[in-house]
Length: 356
Image 1 (cartoon, rainbow, N blue to C red):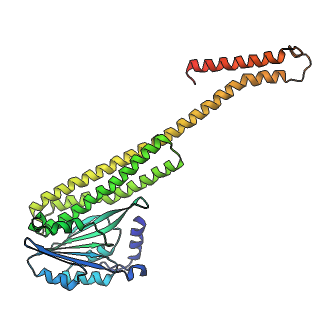
Image 2 (cartoon, rainbow, N blue to C red; image 1 turned 30 degrees about the horizontal axis):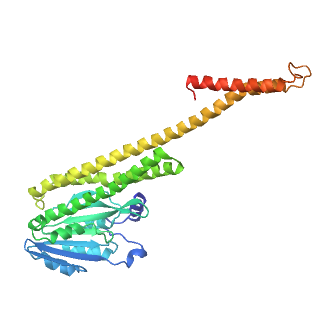
Image 3 (cartoon, rainbow, N blue to C red; image 1 turned 135 degrees about the vertical axis):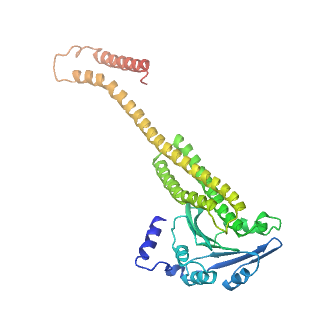
């Protein structure tokens, strides 16, 4: 994400503020999905593959309108949406500038939040993130996603229920519900990381190897990535719950406080993961050192045993004619027996001392 953000900033060098970004040709022809949800306490209308004209027509109604746009690679499309809804040019620039840090901007007539949406690739077993832009107007909410993600499907299902709380409240409550959905999804990703840590912990004590060390470093990088994605949301939601704007009712701010608590809980979980991986790295190094000490201990004992034996063998291996016991019939067996008794005695002494 960092390199992508840096490349985006480099491409904007010298451009006028509010200039929309340009994407590679690989995304130029990709389809942009626009879905429309218009609801009130007694009515619910959902339209997929909606046009901007359909979305504008709903704004004249007293109902709440939610426009969800999946795909932000077409600057002309984003510019058209900005003109029709009266969005600030700086807001449009931020929508198309990928790799943004989570933030909240108050444009008086609209509120704009940039958030990070986390996803998990089960095949690669790695987490990634996408940028989500959420705009709150008087009676509408607009969301921009990089790709067609099902993350907001639970909100759609709640909107279909006539007796749901979200149908009885204003656009600010829908805005809160979408943010809450993003934060709740963080715990799904954190659960995946927790499972990997549990598996790694078992491997660490059973049979640690070079692959274990590589996995530890991989998880540490992943946790750092998650921390960078989630930590700024604490400031965003804190500002959102204290914001003085006619677009946000005081009753909604009470629910935002709950989202803030969930964000703190997610951050605390990440911090505990960081401490756990640091402890695992220390345990791995300690295990390797312990194994090395055991190996050195065995080698030292073997070397110590053979020192006196080598000394005796070297004496009787000297090229002299007159050596005591050299021509004795039982000399060889006596020396070998003495060497055996000496070895056994040294082993008994080592065991008595607790060295083996």
